[in-house]
Amino acid sequence: MLQPGLARPRPPRGMAQSHSGVQPLSSYSDKHFEPLPKPIGEPPYHIDLETMIPGIGKIASKQKRLVFHTVGDTGGIKNSDYQDAVAGQMKTDLAEKPESELPRFFYHLGDVVYYNGQVGDYYSQFYEPYDHYGPPIIAIPGNHDGDPVSGQTSLDGWVRYFMTENPYIDSDICGDAPRVTLSLPNVYFTLNCPFVTIIGMYTNVPDGGSIDSVQQQWLTNEFATAPADKALITALHHPVYSFDDHHSGSPAMADALQHAINESRRVPNMVLTAHVHNYQRIEREIAANTPTPFLVAGAGGYYHLHGMTADVGHVDSEVGAKLVAHDQFHHSYVTLAVGADSIDGVMTPIAETGSKKHKTDTVPDRFSYSARPLKLKGGATISL
Picture (cartoon, rainbow, N blue to C red):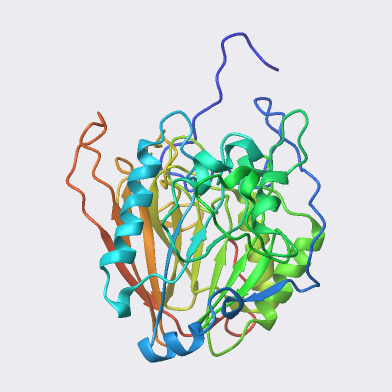
């Protein structure tokens, strides 16, 4: 029962998920599962990076790696300075990095446009900030992209750029920052790349995320049929684990991933998430003796950053998730380099000298994990 003056409760301290069990309905939210737009491709909704970057296979083979940017929650509503600073440094990477370290695309982890993915805000929050970011920007939708207001259809703005049957320049909204639209086959899809397969989910609008049985079956099949000679990365907007003080991790998303892992026997080499507006690197052992990193990379430009409820080294006693690194004081983005043997990464924080939250020097988080395919052994099952 709602009581006068009561606010949404904070996540419990030191816990990587807000609670155990099935995500409950919240008295503080009227967000519900939104219907999905019609796919423009055929199941199983695969798209090859080569179609967007001709010759990328040869380039990656020569460099022995594929490098790309990733982050979410970029929409620069209220104060665009933070998004501009992150986008500016990403564009600097394109100008200054040597060929072997050059990012080839940007994989966006959702919440492109706040607060409701409006078509009219795509210029200020998408086209203009990345006006000279030359490589393709590929995305999964976030909850704000899919949460419509009156007169909208869920994901209409996202679909208008990312899911067009015939690529074109949408001059009605891109203005002086032209960018050719993409033809992603569906709101959830698999990106086939050199060295890595990236399975991108759409976790919809409700608190904690939600997927239907059709996407669950698709997810399990994609895990089961992913190439055995490549790394596997799963990307979703709502995090499985998060030690933040605003959203926390989602038991619903944990359930979706654990079903796919248990039924397919395939374990992701890395899980990319956003939604929480900070950076966290969390490890959880799924395959024997091999930690799986769960990244929260949601500090891509939205003005308000989220604090933490745990320190580095803390382990959630219920789910076994360990907080390895975090940054709650800076906006940031992640660069990943995937090769035959390893996934190497760095989180680049952006100096914000005008911020009252600025307490530490800008220290990148560097990491490396195995890119070798991982599987559950024997009859083992896991619970996330």
